[in-house]
Image (cartoon, rainbow, N blue to C red; front, side, top):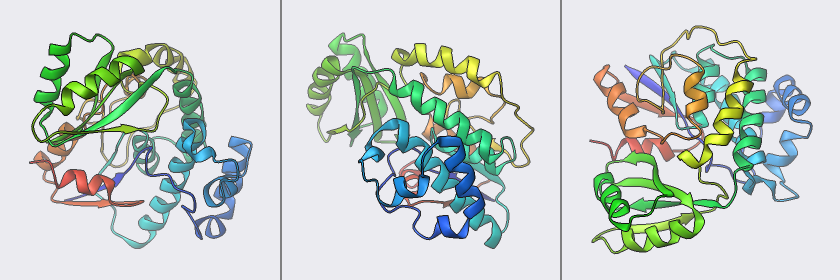
Length: 274
């Protein structure tokens, strides 16, 4: 069985989506209308360097993912499962027919606005050591505002939290043999309890949208189980990304092949999960 994967924030770059926009003029016009600016100009030229801003990066990644997903569907057999990493889960839901493109874009736009409203935090990637070692190091520091935010692979996690405490935690984890800690260029403590205010507000936003049954099963990156309703999208803001659990669920269901739109970020992570 096959699973199609959609990456999340972090894959954005100036020039992404070249040639896609001209091939999908109606969808591009729809995106411009929903967002209130030119998605093509943002992705291809980024004159104001907005792609580094969460408010713009998330809609841009979502829309390019969506167009790539449409083109892939036209030339390949339908996948047996769909999954996305954090933001990418919205693309999986659109591909599964749970949301239409316009509603997905509206939700992503509001999600990005709310997430960018929580400031004073940051994130760092941790490579080379198991998540259990990272958790133990955080516990031993006694810090209360730093958390594991992403369980990406067996020896690849992300920590996030208060910016000052994150620096202390990074030094403690960097002292572990084989570990490497790399700051990520974001302004918020995404996927941690510090995002609770944004989660609460986003929950009210989700209440105004209709979610249809999935035509293709979607595995959630919040629980690692099947997507079962919009509550998971609210929880996604303050809960860690359980990518390892999602991949293990897919493999247990019989998935042996993973295909990815928009790069190889997730494919690389899948190969590091055993």
